[in-house]
Length: 99
Image (cartoon, rainbow, N blue to C red; front, side, top):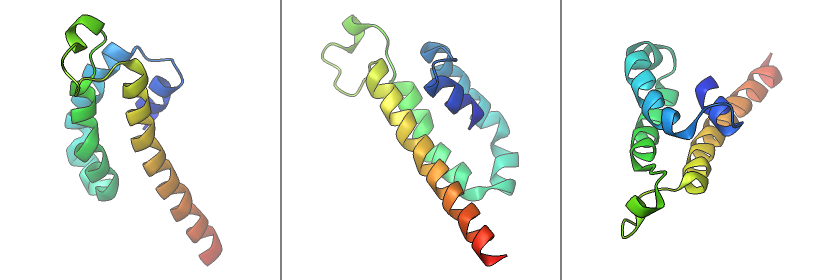
């Protein structure tokens, strides 16, 4: 999640992120699967495809409606990030209320 936050905050190059995030996710997935299965499923469901669809070159995107420019890429990453953030925040609030 930290890598996603850095990307969304403009502190991680989009092109590098599109390659580094799926690689990092794949290497951490066994541990993540054990510690937080829901997060693992969410990230693996959407993020590899979103990252694969990013294309910084407008000429390459021509005629390819599935490819994402930087603004669409950021928006899709932000949607996944906010899903997990909201879920984590709701879980935290429930824990606080229950204890």
